Length: 345
Ligand code: 5GP
Ligand code: MN
Image (cartoon, rainbow, N blue to C red; front, side, top):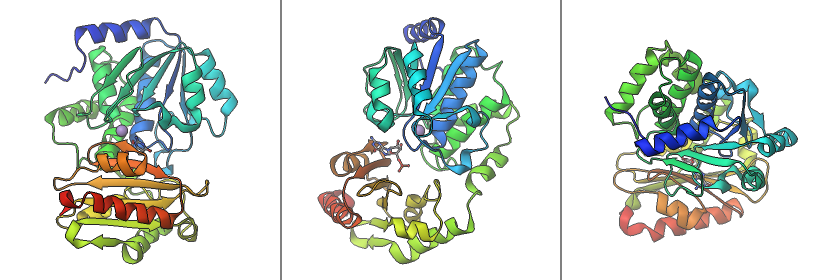
């Protein structure tokens, strides 16, 4: 099965870019998810494999607790914890690899470092509307995940034979989390061909599933129950559902990063539902509401994320944020749903 992504020109560009770079920073978006962490660690592993000594993964802030087991997380440099080290890494870099985000602004507090640094930029991503102001842009929105792209690049660069189990685990984790355990964006046969190649590196896919999806505290499960039972609003005639979660509610259930992961997908289990929206207060910054959108049954949420929630993402899985109170965010959400009522009905 042919899993090559690059044409010969792009492949040569990528080879040259890697050959001519010695000090490499790999970064991903704020609140990095399984794909962001998996793809950056896998790409680092490959760059080490081809002899690059100075490769640093720099992330804006914390990743969820359920990713802590991924091989290599101990060497991640967090900008919110160690800003001086991250600044030095960007200052010294001759190549910055931007993984799993389409617009520079998605690195948030790291933006001045990313835009101010003199290094060449390589973008590897699968979101809609990529920023193309890079030395090389490898963007493919048909891919399940950035991790899948990274695998295909490594294979096309003849790195599969030498790939180790650690790298394979990171790639599998990214592909699995970005497809909800292979339940969406995961119908193309190439995905399962790639999984078969990863299994040959002796990864234990069932163990990876357990580590990621069976890692919650009892409180986190109770928070889900509270949201679904007490907070879910369903607008039957528009096949839409949303819920709000306040900081106080999260504190009541001893919220830690990752506890809200996937909650927005739960209402999609309602027969015929087209749109699910999660509105949650940021735990650190006041007057900031984090928005997650999911869609299905023929409706696509990405335009709504762009138009109403200062965001974007994928056709059926988008995100954004609102600088307002949770009550105002709810009003904006109702307006957004009404604005798309003809498509939702
Ligand atoms: P989630 O709801 O899981 O946080 O995000 C869903 C998708 O939307 C992810 O692919 C994510 O990268 C994208 N996304 C989340 N927040 C934002 C945002 O603020 N801006 C943009 N452009 N995309 C976002
Ligand atoms: Mn992704």
